[in-house]
Image (cartoon, rainbow, N blue to C red; front, side, top):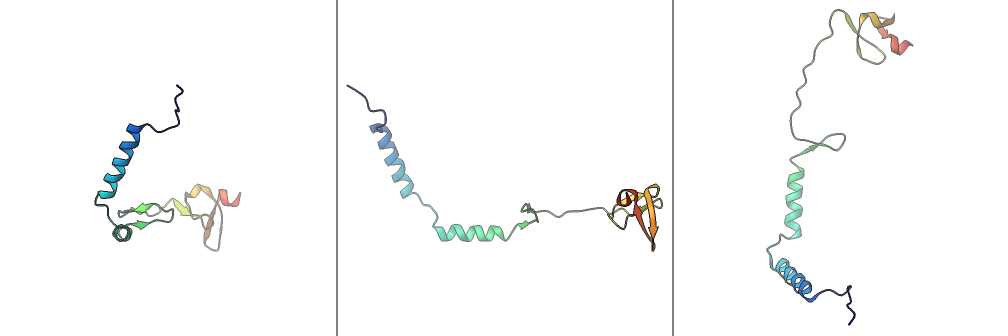
Length: 99
């Protein structure tokens, strides 16, 4: 006698039906309560510009420029005075921006 391997076995079929009945009888939340919970959770977190969730306060220590440093008026990076390429109207420009 040839066996049909595509047919579902009887013991598997019974277990699938019993698990479906168990899921139907379980106390599952309705759709409205799930939506309300998600909306409340969305209000707690803030999203950053890249979509990442930011849930903590960022602390940044700002260090002022030293006496031998300048801020390039073109790229706005703080550089050492040895990298000044030119000064015009009281603004300094670095070697990379002028090169």
